[in-house]
Length: 349
Image 1 (tube, rainbow, N blue to C red):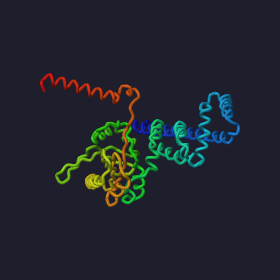
Image 2: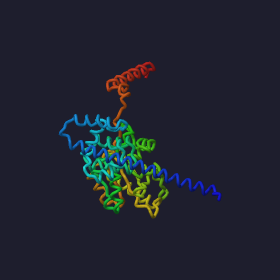
Image 3: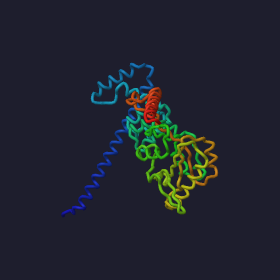
Image 4: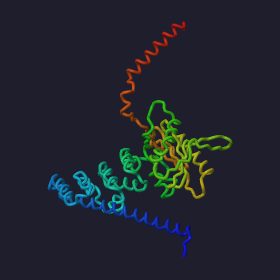
């Protein structure tokens, strides 16, 4: 009996899918077994620290002799295993978090983190967001845990949003947001910051966190024949709601909350689908006083969070020597004034 081509290709496609899924599970299983092995080796080393540093040196040599093709058993890596076992003492965290990360991810955490619970938080974020090692290292460098998990936040989310959305919205808010890809400079205006955020949208979304999808900037609303423009509009697939972000290159002022409240009402009325959750707002200011923000939000009827943002102070090393000093600038200004005075005299001015 001849098989129909379409039917054959459907069967082939299904088999290929099953093979790929099995290969992926096999890779995960191999990784899991390796991480657990490294943890157990680390426990053995930690339990025998009484034998001194030479103990690890001898282990590395003897493992190499016994398993010449095996990699990952250098003195340095064995010491990482020891640290791994000493930090991760709860086997549930080992199984549910650490064993789901690559060893390279784990070592990135081992270098920076000493606390098991903080280790777990970064591990869970890495798994949930699919962070590469370089992204994880960047998040560690930017102290994301301190800014997102334990920072003091000024919001009314808990009062106005039901669980679990209120918890998720609060977790989304960082204090401060760090846009280190935008250079801080005197006189920078809000629209310039906004344009930089859009020009670097991938980095912006990474800093905002899980689930953010960009809808538009200077998003136009027409209400009672008047035009209004929202700085940044997003949809969050995790929160299942629109997110309005307003930027202010000043200290937070209570009247900012009223305007953002107005925008949230408009988005809820114009864009929000019946199945969407209530639109939330994030007011990003150059600085904010937490108590002032809390008073401003106390009687607001839309969910708003107020936070700060920070820009980069970084100047690339290769440009440091080319930047003029204060003395250089002063001399150039004086020289230009002298030239202007001479030219004015020549023309009888």
